[in-house]
Length: 47
Image (cartoon, rainbow, N blue to C red; front, side):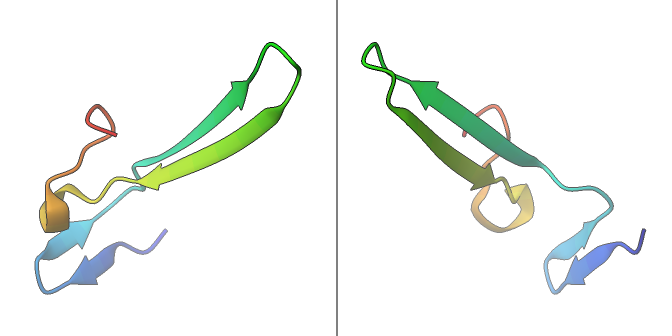
C-alpha cells in the first residue's frame, strides 16, 4: 500500500467510518465520514 501524501502531511492508513441507521419502521440509511485530522482536525472519534 502506498502512503497518501499532500502538502499538510502523509497518511499511511485510511480513517473512514461507515454508519448504518435503521428506524423502527425498517427504513435503512447509510452515512460515511472520511476523517482527515491533518486538514480539518476531524478524527474518527469526533465524526
